[in-house]
Amino acid sequence: MSTFRSGFACFVGRPNAGKSTLTNALVGGKIAITSSKPQTTRHAIRGLVHREDGQLVLIDTPGLHKPHTLLGERLNALVRTTWSEVDTIGMCLPANESVGEGDKFLIRELAQISRKPVFAIATKTDLVKGDKLRDHLLSIQQAGADAGLQWQEIIPVSAVSGEQVDLLAELLVKTLPEGPALYPEGQLTDEPEETLIAEIIREAALEGVRDELPHSIAVVVDEMVPRPDRPADKPLIDVRVNVYVERDSQKGIIIGKQGARLKEIGSNSRAQIEAILGTPVYLDLHVKVAKEWQRDPKQLRKLGF
Image (cartoon, rainbow, N blue to C red; front, side, top):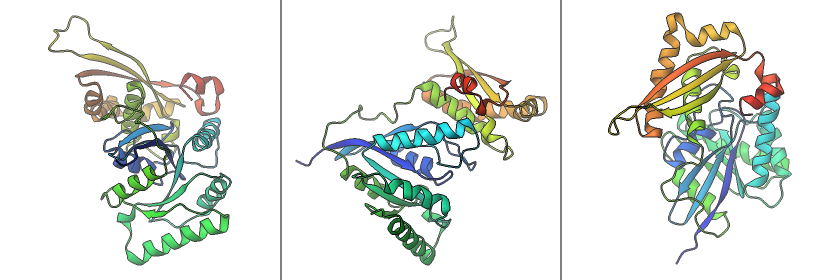
């Protein structure tokens, strides 16, 4: 009988390296929000990959970046804490971009971690052709050698086309310790429903906003309560949510002309929220200003950072 393995792996990389999309592809369902805006991920989201030979708890971390705010510093600290606690690390390096100084800085940091397998994952391979991919893989190998890091494997994958995603799961599981499954079969994440719902709304709010706004948006689920006096066969859950921004001008952008933008955010996220809760919801969105919350320790605590 083959050995069953279970344990933890995390994906690291600079912002927008394809970590969240790859996490969702491996898990086989959407648990991490994705956006073309950098620094979309703000929590270490745990996804569960169930296989016959093992169970992988996959942690998608925020992109490591040069912090300009207290929030940025806290997100970087979260990444470093996460990689110190997992069994295996996968560093994502998008194939459509060259290996840059930010990547090399991160590789040097990873080289300091002893006795832990580190995979180099060339993401977004669907965006490049033959020679370009080969050159990218060679530069990943060179960057590892320059930093004194021996990659466990260098593996090209495409989360979009699914190419080599199964192989990556197999290779990651092989590096885990022997042990029983840590979660029930079929569960995709251990994130609380409130966290997933807040993230879905934040993803909808990020669509189409200008560059300076994404970092200023935070979402908190205020309460989720079943509507009283509803018949048992027609339940409805009231979900009250606060969307926080840092300035009054940003509040106007999120609400939109005659509330059109806020309405769109609600309708774009409602179906996903109903899928998570398994019941129809009434979504009540409010936009509030929390001045300069990214720099204020008290506000960061209140917003869950």
